[in-house]
Figure (cartoon, rainbow, N blue to C red):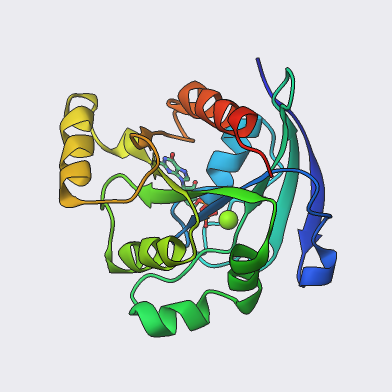
Amino acid sequence: MPWKTEVAATAFNASQFPPENVPEIAVAGRSNVGKSSLVNALLAAKVAHVGAAPGKTRSVNFYSVDSGGDSGLFRLVDLPGYGYAQRSKSERKAWSQLTSSYVEKRKSLILVCHLVDFRHGLLANDLALQEWLFERGRPIMVIFTKADKISKGKRRGTLQQYVRDGLKSVDVPIVTSGEERFGLDELRTFLAAYVARTRI
Ligand SMILES: Nc1nc2c(ncn2[C@@H]2O[C@H](COP(=O)(O)OP(=O)(O)O)[C@@H](O)[C@H]2O)c(=O)[nH]1
Ligand SMILES: [Mg+2]
């Protein structure tokens, strides 16, 4: 069943964040990894701007979602991406002040979905993000994107290799494609269950 959704806020500063009264699941990852595409695919709507040019999203975008049932209300939060080649220190600077203050202070944030390109696995700046989130006690769920770029027969082995290489994730990472629309039901089911069992 498709989720009901609407744009709750487009924030360029913290005063534009909606109240902390609804659990929030943030979507983080490198620029161009497919955050906006995945948000659109999940919500079956064209709410998030998909850019050919990386690093376009500067605002923090909040989407209200009704996944149905009791306690099914939550928000998906599309965060600005971080760059490709920087090392962790400059990386954190580049990853806007607004984003880091959101992640550090937001009381209603229950989970960060860390999107990672399935072709590349976790790069240095992904590992830096994981460490940074871990230090702040933020639960992470790894979601692989663009899995349509890896042939079907290689997907299971690729996932197992990335898990063996080491990553932080509250559950087995979900392998998705916003383009070919697979892994989405699995992800919806996971998120709805996570929301239902987490209090803010
Ligand atoms: N092949 C493929 N391309 C994708 C997928 N998701 C996104 N893209 C492409 O990757 C680019 C960046 O996507 P976008 O969602 O804007 O990434 P964001 O910067 O992380 O929000 C766009 O050109 C998308 O069309 C996917 O699942 N498969
Ligand atoms: Mg985007």
